[in-house]
Length: 151
Image (cartoon, rainbow, N blue to C red; front, side):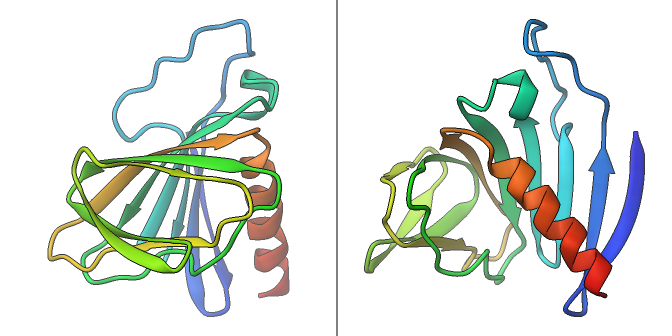
C-alpha cells in the first residue's frame, strides 16, 4: 500500500493506493480497505470501479466527521447514485429537500437531481455508495491530481 499527501485550496488530501485485481477476479476487501481520498473532514474509499467493473458501476464508501459538510450541492447529468447509510446519521440534500438519514436509510438519486450530504451529528457518519454507470473514480483521481499540481 502506498500513501501520499497533496494539497488543494489549503486542504490536505491523503491518497492511499492499493494494487487491484482485474475484473475477472473476485474483490474481497477488509473494512476500510480500497483506494482512499481524504479531503478535510470527508473520506472516500473506492472499493470497485474502472477495469474491475468495466465502468458499469463504481462502488465507494463516504465518511464525514461530526458537524462537517460533504462535497457541496452538485448533480450528475448521466449518472444515478445509490446510498445506504451504514454508520451514524447523514443528512442528504435530494432535490430541494434536506432529509435526515439514520443508519439503514437507502436513497436513490436519479441523474440530473441536485444532491449533497453532510454530518450534522456528533459521531462519524458513513454511507455506502454505488454510482451508475461507473467511471466516477477516474474523474475524481484526475481532479485530485490536477488540484495537487496547482498547489
